[in-house]
Length: 261
Image 1: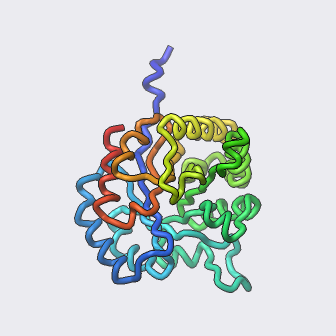
Image 2: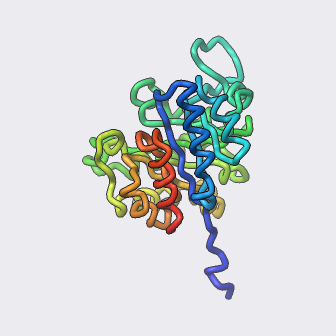
């Protein structure tokens, strides 16, 4: 019988900073140069930045050649068309993006981004050569009602419905407990690990062994002080960081927390 330890897949931690609607181009360039100078501190962790669209090309020019991911915060699923205010996946590639954030809780809540749209957006991102981070998560009301697992499974199954098993490992999932985003509240490490384990079980139903290669990030008030504890869960493969990603030192400190996994 083969040693089961030989079958363990090591997933490189990923820490992605979502700037949301912060930073002008000059500020973004200054941040990118400062981050570039500190990359050797966390060279065993993958890093990514999700800047506003106006800063994307500037950040990509500095960081993408160094292996740092540069992701847009959203995109449209159509290749082109009469969609005023939207950008396509190919436009993102043309601007230097390496990936795209999809289904963030703010996009779902404020702009009506639906599971149906995400089922089209994730395959469109993959077809364009972008790495998609699909965000899923339950609201406070859903957690209180005891339907967290049902809601997470629904979001994962819908969002990945059009993804072939051969491409599954190119997709990253970010678990965002909506009640812990921008509130100062954080899911305990046990809550985070339980949610991540459930998501991985759903991924295994969809993609079999490929699920072991898929990274699942935790997103929800991640800070330098709690990062290492959150990352200790075996199914927690890094973080999607909001406010703390606006300072280079904080982002690097969070990434350093992943080194102890």
